[in-house]
Length: 483
Image (cartoon, rainbow, N blue to C red; front, side, top):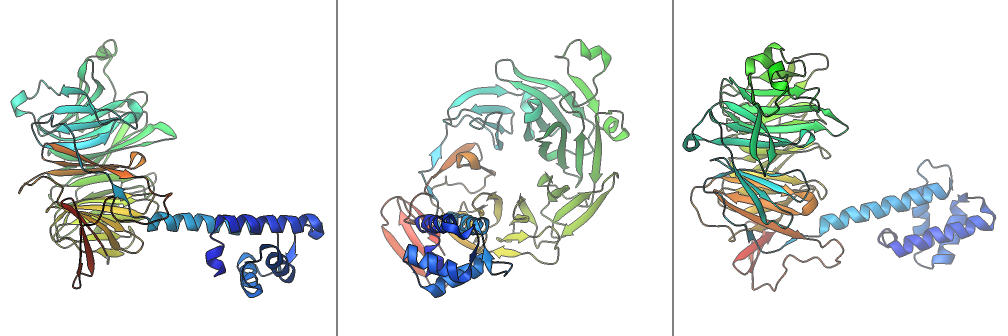
């Protein structure tokens, strides 16, 4: 009983106040077990002496028979913190109605990213059309990417990443080039560097920079030849690459760089790393994790599906760790605090992996009936999104490895589609693209509510599935399942 009461803030305040009053009466801040039990039970007048004795034993971790003010307040603060964590876990997120943004793209949307400001977003379609969306998700600008190397009708963008520390974007094309541009929506797409000469077309990219030193940055690349390559910048704020003397006078001149120049070490402001352990399988996604100091990459192969390439200090070599996942995976995400990798399995399962254990997953989240195409963590709430090919979105409780929500019936009907998933945690916005259509789910803030509810509006139908042990609720054409 007392363990429930101590989670109540008012009781914690009374507990501390009682201790302080006893301290001021001559106890010099130290209390024995007997004096603590008598003082608290007489002042608070809740619970029994036995329960207060158990509380004293929990506070007195070193078992010296005495506690002081610091020990008591540390215990109370820890209890309040754990209570807050339990509250976050117990509240099932509620969502506003699915919002369809204006259809500006005529081709498949390749990426959705947060750009420059926390409330601005950038979308890019396969034909090179860029869209800038404002804080209220209103379209602000559109820019068409153009390049002299490719005719507009043949232009095909494969990936885009933002380089916030240098105010640039990097765009990869099917013609085996990457363009680095300072994106100015008044002047258009102004390419500053053209990186060419890759062995295979770059399919995916990831950019990381040191928040404490913007000169340190890493651009990770995955291609159709099974290669994972990285450009490690050491003077990004000064210049990403060396510029020839002839171009220094005119910053508008596009500098063309061959990949072999970087490999040879000609550019002193950066160097490259590479591995080919994926055996010519297309790389689906790459990521550099600063907490692991490793490069993560996945393919749809059943062997060497997920690879971690660990950087060695003072050495250009990479140490490999390979995970073999049946039927391969489409995507992954990494939670640095939980130290977990989530993989979106083609076999309809979401697996949770410890980066240091390759033999078996730390957990398997089952429930999808079709291939999982995207996963993403909600880091602050220890939750995980997963989106499947049959257009069913699930939200998982990572700690208990249970499905909290199943959202279906709201997404456009299409048999074959390309989709991206991006959750902007600070704004509680989930972006989902299906081909050229962009949709947004906005999470409502409910942490202050005591009542836990699964629906915003009245539930119209309830059905229990004894086989799957799921309860299905219906509301306005969409339903959620709580296990």
